[in-house]
Length: 338
Image (cartoon, rainbow, N blue to C red; front, side, top):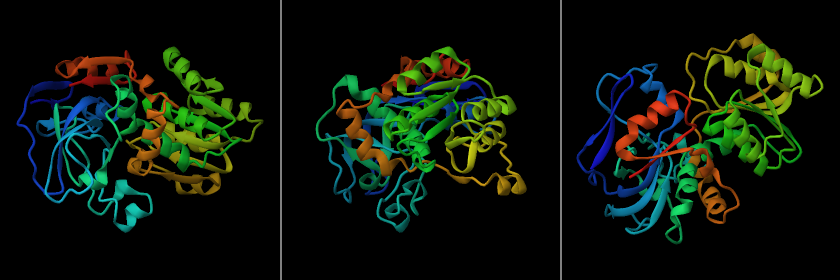
């Protein structure tokens, strides 16, 4: 099969790889209908996260089940399935409390930018649709695998409710789908922080009421101006840098909620500053599996179209161009057809 490997900074290759096989009897093998490149994939691509050996890439996927292990009971060959970037048994006490991305048996998926994929803990990780979806719905269903699930968690963790004022820090795919999620949860005002016209347009389409182009201290001051000096009820941090985290915390009102779903790089919080900020913090790897059934239904019923974040579609063999386009900000998110 064709698979994607990262050999070093900006050295991404599509090459022949061995077909995956059943390893544990709780595994499934799926043939991917589509996969994609995530903003977090750019950290190792840029050399910010060390890569010491050739590494398979990706963590977002959907497709048709080809084979299952003998202990798989719910997932069947021929079904269309979507799975999370983190595997889960969906039965342990952590899963039962809604944090499947910290399951006691968790593994992080690391090879979905390929034609075929082995999924451990298939019964707990995968969600099957009732029927095979149309080709037009594949991008939206693929988005539920991570970026929509993560944006939804960001809004949920930030306690977005009807009538609230929400700030979204970050205009990548997760931030944009955080806007969509906040709108679905009934937010009255959604302020998207973005400097890029194409992303601002999509944020508006997803439900943003205001756009703030400033960053850092100027960005915080602008949020305070828009909220009569108080700050927002809910702030979604969707980047993962020191600046974005501090911008998020300082944009929230006292008693407000800040979620953080951007994979952190170089983030260091000052205890005293956090103490006197008087905000709730909640984040981490999104428990996408908790939300998948609801999000899949919203996509299948065409209530939402998160697939709009894919503004570049390429065949899997051209994955290197997909990475370059996202690295150079010529694309928000690249969908790869297998």
